[in-house]
Image (cartoon, rainbow, N blue to C red; front, side, top):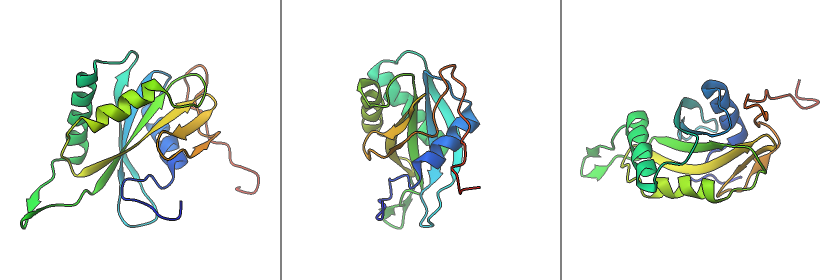
Length: 166
């Protein structure tokens, strides 16, 4: 991506790798990472929280859970000098499950939960990323890769450097 919108994750593979490392994710986990959306080319992952494990909550409950985590992670937007302050953060969702790396109804559920969360925080809610034992992909931006991924046992894969990257 040469042009980045403020809600884009610039390097999804790096964000997913860091999130899996921090949360020690397993299949069935849903994580939310908060990234600095600043103007620098690098986005750093500031925190990662597990928002769900296992079966899906009710649709309205999922939106409430996401709203609570968004407020805790990013804080409420402030009214400053007759306008809302611009968002400073970006929230990305990572769905960890087994199976093919093809987004489906489970990922759409969480994307729609964000849509109706009405979190009014200092963050954009960004894409939903799917991670399986075969790799990862974004629901909206469609970028993908083989690494990082999940082991079938649920342990995060370590990222193996490509030849020439050492």
